[in-house]
Length: 143
Image 1 (cartoon, rainbow, N blue to C red):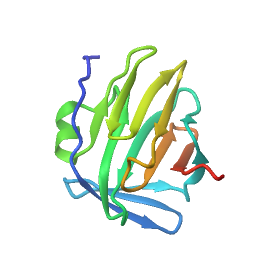
Image 2 (image 1 turned 180 degrees about the horizontal axis):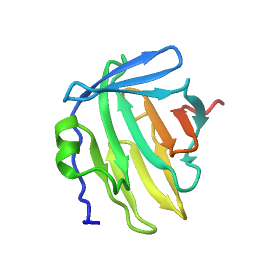
Image 3 (image 1 turned 45 degrees about the vertical axis):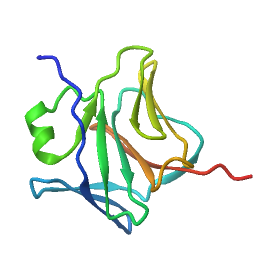
């Protein structure tokens, strides 16, 4: 398998609907992430071994940027035509995806952290494989 590169995301369409989140790629395809997303206060550590997608939306939830974390299956050209980005992390690595949103490796899991005071919108995390799908929304910690 060839090495994969980081790919910068572009703004894509988003539709927050009952039961999940619809992402509208540049190539006209749509993907439905089942939900509703579970609210999570503070950093989120995904279940181990899952494909992790991070979506940061605008305040209205009608557009956003999506980044795949450590995706080794999707070719760079496909990502570029869909508008989805990718970040490849090494072991014990951390990367800022978007101002205020960072991802890091944590054993076989991915940790996603958001400083929501810096994010002018919403932060969703999707972790999935052939066996299960998990949807989360990072929210402000309750006082």
